[in-house]
Length: 111
Length: 112
Image (tube, rainbow over the protein chains, first blue to last red):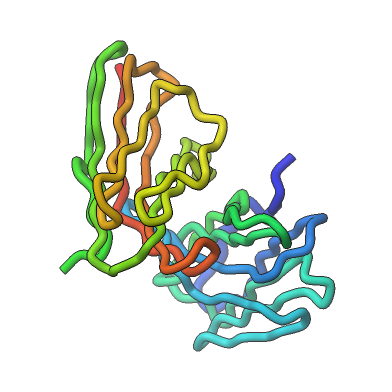
């Protein structure tokens, strides 16, 4: 089992629709990061959430950190083809400095 | 200027060969990493160095040997390559151990 499980693993939707992807764990994290990776490139950080219950917005993307700091979600409103990519959550459990990546969600937005 | 650059971008080689991948960062970060991304896109840490000192060494075959000549460089040497080593290897750096990671573009290794 992976420390950070993401769902769904694959998601393909039409342009203009809304979607939510999830990052879940049984461990408590001091913070969680979300990255987006496009083909042929390395992941790029989108946001870091630090406080339980925290909500951060980045244009059409809304990130939430669970109250218990064990999970996070990413909601995209009115998805655009440019949102296509692999979305990865990453975190370090309390007492462990090693940053672990989630299993990833491959998102495809169809024009 | 590329913040984290790694070379080569593509590497195709035969089983049993030895190869190296180089990485350099110009961000002034103290911590550098090697990650392996498999065909399912799962990103797994291999090694982490802080100021030239090895701090994370995951369960990686000892055919993989990282070397950090200075805090701006972290190279990866792989001996006796096997088919299962085929993957994309990413170098990354961060200001601190659990901070934002800045990744290179990746080096796609194919072992035939």
